[in-house]
Amino acid sequence: MKRPEAGEEQAYRKITETLRRFFRGERGVTAADLTAATALPLATVRELLPRAADEYSGRLQVTESGEILYSFPRGLKSRYRGFRAVFARACEKAAVCLAVFFSWLFKIWIMAMLIGYFALFMLIALASFVLSTVVVRSSGSGGRSGRNGGGFFAGSVFNLIIRLWFYSELARPYGSRRSGWDANGRASRPGRTEAPRPLHRRIFAFVFGEEDPNRGWASREKKAILAYLQSHSGIIALPEFMALTGLSPDRAEEEILAFCGEFGGMPEASPGGTVIYRFSEILKGAEEAAVRPGTRGEEIMAPVKRLRIFSANTKNMNGWFAAVNGVNLLFGSYFLYNAAAGPVSAGAGIERNSYVYALVTAFLEYMGPDPRLAIAVGLGVIPIVFSVLFWLIPAIRFYALKKENGAIRLENFRKGAFSLIWEKPAGIREQDITGKAAECSPENLAAARDRVIKDMGAYSMPGVTAGNGMVYDFTGLKAEKEILEECRAGVKDEGPGKTVFDSDA
Image (tube, rainbow, N blue to C red; front, side, top):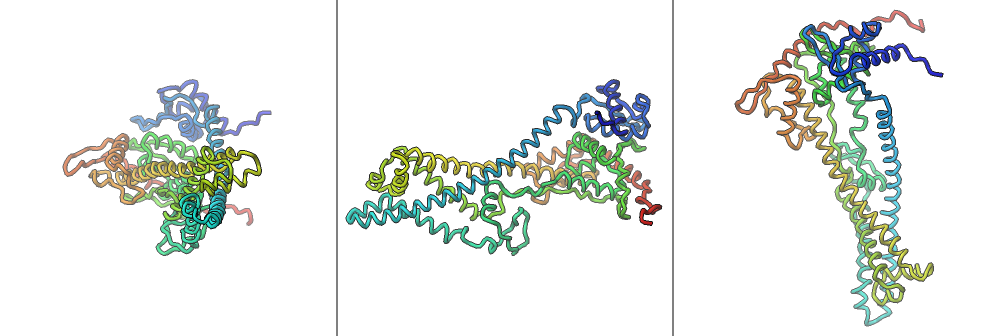
């Protein structure tokens, strides 16, 4: 049995069906047109039209009389419904789940390979060192040749064990070191002692990196915009939204319509013909400080994304992880080479002074006449493949982080630049548009500055004068700010008002 639709959903469906039948393409429609075509209340149509504009990528225009026209030049194709939208969301969720699943599998494989194989190789090296010592002592005059062969190799490896486990960074108490980053990648105070982390988490941090400091960014950005609305009489203009999000005019218009649909906003034309977005419902908070009309010249405090770090481990720590992996690669190559061209029997191995390979061969000869295939795969191919991946993944991640941090710097720079232009639209010098903090400084400052000026110019054409660098005058923004302040000054909302009924009274 089909569930009956709620009143609002039924009205919205009626509006979208009417748009699909009569108002396709470039033809504009007003709230009054839809009211006449659907017989729905005018207030309902005005409330639901921004939602339709968001879902179907609508376009907003303002007429000379101050009326807002909605048009749908891209057609009535939903961004959230239909097979393609549902399939895209399902694929995205499936990709996230698979990424988490294979990430945990790979983490288990890392611990089994990096630590397990390293311990196995060290045990083999230690046993071969003892074997080579016994052979050298029993051979008398042949000792010199033994020391120059497999015994020297085994002794060198054993010496590496001592260095790794007794003098390396791994042997020190992790909590005794001081670092500029904490376990989550945040900058720590000078002299602050790090909280101890297990060895496996440090290894995973080297391979997969730290937790994203910008996790849940969409929610944090929405909270910042809502706080700005509450402190500015529930009214916002598109340049302010651009300064809060760093988006271009076209993208900002799409996102602010989605924001209207989510939080009960309504685009309207001001007496001066400027489109403003009013969120009256946001002002009905219980706190008296919810409404603080913005003052002229108040700075926009846009949320800033933080740069990601490669790892919170020290460089020495990551260096030793790479060294341990190098030992595994060295042993894997050694066993693969000897399995392909080396001796078959243990005795022949000792004669060739290949004590490490001879020891493994002697042990595996009890399982079969020719253990070369097992040695080649188990002690050669598998550790080699793992070692390559253990270095390759961090290398790829390093360059991916570099690209991601570049995008973060550019986004933060755009927010600051848009905010600067909005706060001081007249007499903007080109050299004034710059990023001071590290997370706000794009790699190509000139290109980023030029892109910001073009994006803001697409919304409001500036006047340009040449002198000591270019000077831009966004006179249209200045007039828009004055109109916006007049609209905000006319807001008399004082919150939810006094309590007239109490269920406990």
